[in-house]
Amino acid sequence: MANYRWIKTGVQGLRYREHPTRKHGIKKDRFYQFKHYVPGVISNKTAKPVQSAESFGWLSDGWTLEKCTTYIHKIKENKKTGEGPQSLEELRKLEELKNFQEQARIEKERIEAEKLKKQAISFNEVWEKYFEHDPGKKFNSWRTEKTIYKHWIKPTLGKKPLRDIQKLNLQTIKKKMKEAGKAERSIEYALSIVRQIFNFAQDNGLYSGAIPKINRKSKVIPKFDNKVKRYLRRDEAEKLLPELKKRSIDVHDIALVSLYGGLRFGEVAGLTWGDVDIDNSKIYAMDTKGKVDRVVPMNIVLKDMFKRRGPGRKHELIFPDRKGNRMQSPSHTFDRAVDELKLNEGVTERKHKLTFHGLRHSFASWLIESGASIYVVKELLGHSDIRLTERYAHLNSSALHDAVNGLEPVKEPKSAKVTHISAVG
Picture 1 (cartoon, rainbow, N blue to C red):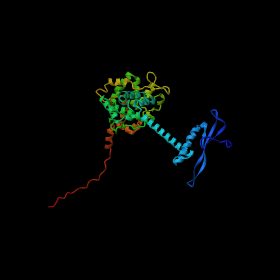
Picture 2 (picture 1 turned 90 degrees about the vertical axis):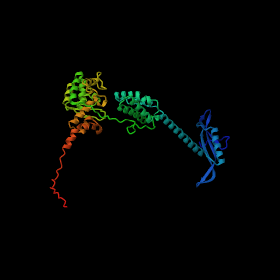
Picture 3 (picture 1 turned 60 degrees about the vertical axis):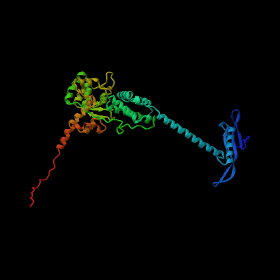
Picture 4 (picture 1 turned 120 degrees about the vertical axis):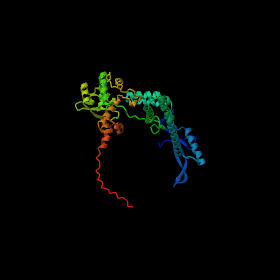
């Protein structure tokens, strides 16, 4: 390259050399260079100008004669005024800075536009993504959430962007549900769904704005007493179990597992023969609501029932539905038997009604009444928090009396004889 001949152009200081073989179009490719004087620097002080040859680049890379000439005119103009870049290197650095700043501006605008787009996403758009997100959720849960969303949440929030949803909108849902006579628990459920949608949107990068406070402290979610008030007395159980057996042996046996084992319906429905150890009188409750597997001892009633029904293959459901699949909800046979025996006669509040879940509560209540420790009951029920089990504590009032009455009295020394002296007048 050192032997290449430099060829002058019509522009002062601008020259080029040609590549021996490479072409740009029909002509040989050209490499442009600018030869001029730049300020010299010695010990941070300006010295006499020195000659410098600064390269533009190849014609094939976009460095045309016109483009090079434009840069040279800028440099010469800056030299006259004494302001701005006075060399190609300085000019390039300035342009790099400007390009960087422009790219930064473009990126900032992109981020802002993306942020505004996220904040503009409607509640219904997020709901549709949320609804498709977790196919593993139980069928009954999805069905309930879908119904609540359709009737109570969508009419108020569906078309609204998440950024525009305020506490007042949530109060509107609450008011409409109250006016329709919906229970406080249903209202809490609806507002909890709203909270789940907001959390889902943030967790998945769909929304980056604020979330309205949806908790009891914010006074949006209503306070209510959700403690179970109804469980089976033993004389009621003696009537209910034969009635169930008369109607359906399967429903009867399922009820036994909940009443004498404390299992939730979902846990009973999921039992396979591999979860039951008849020889060692154990039931393995797997994939429970609290996500904690536990072992439940079986009494003689359950042991005899499982012997009568099985055994079956290890992975075979013990209580399948009519199609051989896992049951999704308790049979209405249970409710009809309760109605026949008038166990809910005159009862209006749900928490006072006997439902299938009441069998599990009966199991816990009977244990407490028989003197079992609340910590033992907690483990048998599979509660993750002792506070969930404490709802049954009041049933053991006799134990409280026994505990107090059992306190050994402190032996006090006998009082010395006291002589009263009359005042002398």
